[in-house]
Length: 270
Image (cartoon, rainbow, N blue to C red; front, side, top):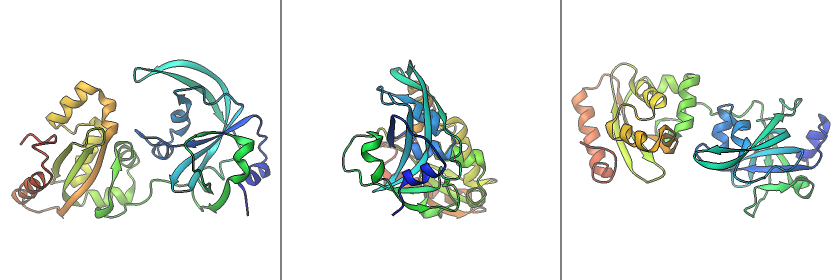
């Protein structure tokens, strides 16, 4: 049985007065921040003095008892700062070098049946068992198929920014009816994409603006702030040939608006 601490000691990394951070959360999730290369910054913002220690061993929740090793960080200091209108503790950190071959590749098995997310290291470190060492760093992955698309706004921005080939090829080759769900309220917006660039071009507009030019969404972001778009979740209802008649696309869009009641209870205005 190989433990995470065994790998760290082989590097070697000297852990002193350390905590284990079991990272969870939303808007964005820590995994989304990791994919975008922003995990360290995401972790620095804390609502309490959670990192009164010398080192942080960071794990990102993957589901059930699986966790992704996201690096070890040296704590350099802390300041109080405002974020989204609330008081936070902003930690200055530096990622410990020499672990690039493990970060994002090691999957840890850890049965955490309690709520606490900031754990005293020596008490729990022996319970972090390595279940897999992936051949490559975990990333957002290839296009999963039209019926399996479920993207947060942060993930959509990453897909568009990186122009992930499988995603760009799949989304730019179809017309589609899609739905945007507001995870904060449950309200839906049904839209369509057709013509040159297909769904890729349409969703690239959402990635850039948050509202895609839709009046109701534009007004919502003007009221709530652009960061509110992080509540949006994107999925595909139906795909069609890129050259399909636009009237047919309009009919299918109307059908889905009726099915999902997105005019009565959502963000569609017509």
